Image (cartoon, rainbow, N blue to C red):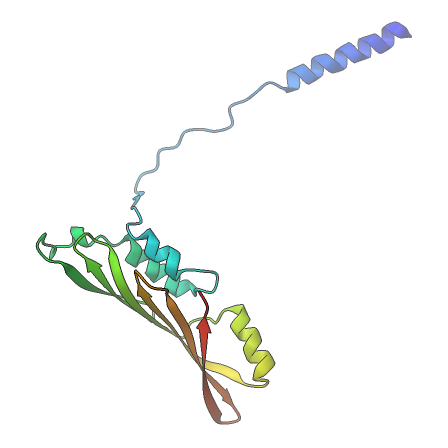
Length: 170
């Protein structure tokens, strides 16, 4: 009986040692057609984006942050600043770049964006029966100041309209 128990234990240890054999599970893959672009204005992105930022705004803000004014055909070393306008899917950003390519200030407007959850909850609690018919998201960025964000919302109920402004705290 003693030999049987010792034999089972040795068999168990041997099988555990075999199962610990490491197999290479990953293969190296080379991707073609992939472009990596640095985020030149990461400070801008950190200030303008948060959990309440609508998706269309995030997409356009990312494009603005990656834009390199130095690669533009109108760029010249002796010019101190550039105003660049970006438009996409109901959104518009007018950004001022300095001669080094940094965003100095930006004004953003997006129409008919999805409202963040806290704003929808506020509307349902404080404006019962009213429906948001139109929304506008506005962002004012200045490099040396706090970012100002606001949702302008048009509510409707039984042929009546009212407009409310919701300032997002930073």
